[in-house]
Image (cartoon, rainbow, N blue to C red; front, side, top):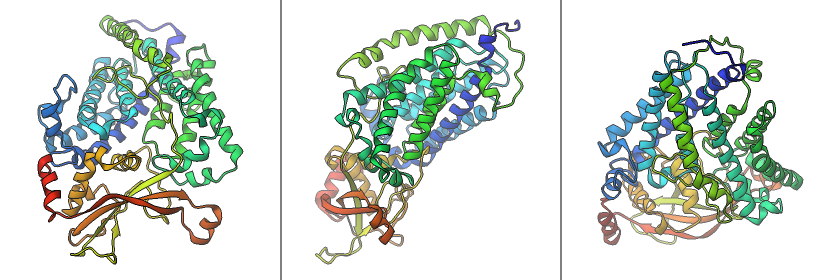
Length: 490
């Protein structure tokens, strides 16, 4: 091994370090989500049980370790293993010794997480799952801290960041007209999946701020990504603009770890000399990686080039699609978000009663979810970068019918049984002593309260009934029990 001589390479030593630590932190959050939510949602007795899924879908379509053991203990063990490996990355132990050890740790992280995603069905069908997996796969080839940073991998990370940003910009430009007339933010803060404490203030801000926000969005997503591939300091400038842009989105709503992950990807554009000004650390003497490792990096680059053909075609197509993986390994996908903006916000409000007989005077109690709006007086919480998967699916459910979301029927049945794993995903259980006799779901239209109403009542939301979403059912209902038995949920 010989000492590295090229400053252009050594300048990215700190870039690699910051990127790996940041990505490790995102994976830690992702595995914590799996530990807390996977079994109630997808476990042996979850809303969409994995054992049923793997009986219908062949391994080749969704490769996952859980085909070997679709058991709750395996889901928990995999989540804990992912947490441990992520901690090794965050603390720097993973890249302290050899590039092969670092690669093994990252491969373990990627393998464990793709095992969750590929059997996670609709609860893991989010674009940021594939982005995270693709970034994790590239991290396998970044090398140990005392080895020359592989510039090829740095460029591949920039290519991923470019596809995330530019794809999002294109889907907006081709999608909802409100992106072109600069009015999307008139609605988005209120109708986004899960508003946060600042969303109300941003929604009620002057209209010019909304138009300026959309204009900045187009600048950051359609023009700035091309800076990633230009010489320094232009690449760094592009990356910093992206970080500021994604930080502003993070402050305006709860989009899971998407914004944090994109900021981490943008770090790949930043020259380490600028990072050193704010992160004082000593760079070791760098050595050239072994021949075998360099060959693996070249093979990776060729693979990415070949797999990029379909995403590029998609970006150039007037029928561009969002968030699509072209292979079961979630490598080199196509990304994009919010091509369409909803104008009204509907919420499914789940209710229960312990009355034996339903009458017009029956008193219904509401279940409160952790993130999505239910109680109009409750301030929207800050959840991101954590991901409340059930709350997100409830947002999608409100835009259609429960027929399109079979997990919803199973959820109602579990509420009738006071299923403790499911109730652990909710903020409140209005029936702590005994299960409800009946449950139902009502649809409401929600709007942010205007400043005057907010000042007088303290309410963040104003809601109006919009009809029934799911009829009142009981476990004593033969027709309902027959549906549950046919699905294998009873």
